[in-house]
Length: 185
Ligand SMILES: [Zn+2]
Image 1: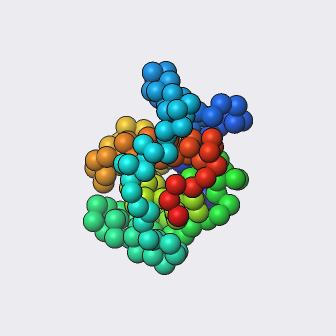
Image 2: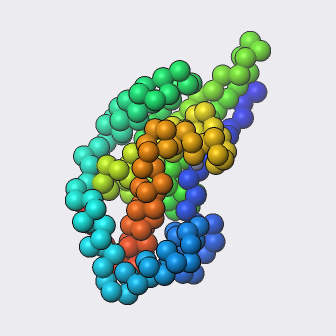
């Protein structure tokens, strides 16, 4: 018997009412500071100062190697990841940035899983830090299904700046929403 367990990195559960929809989980104070940067037209500048260049992991093959290397470094003994690719449909359909799919089946009384990772195409043209964050997030799902304390502990073990990169990625999504123009190409 096969069953599919998918978890995603959710960024937007409700309709896009506010331009700060990606920052709802953060404090009112933080949201006000970001709103001010947007009003002053400075959000893009702030991001470019922090992250100068995009990465060059542009193909599925390069992404596969990148994710496998990370997994080997931090979670060598976890179940293998069978497939890694960029997916242009992810953002639209799932309101997600990355997708981890575990297809499991019981074989000889043991549970065997096939793990597949899909990363939204928008991650082709971002700084390496953002790609690393989503890769770490999806790799962590190989061991931890839920977004709980153990999960985030694993994420910050693989990347100590995980939360900072997630916040900055959300700033960039906000920037894309308000300005519509890519900062890194
Ligand atoms: Zn997730």
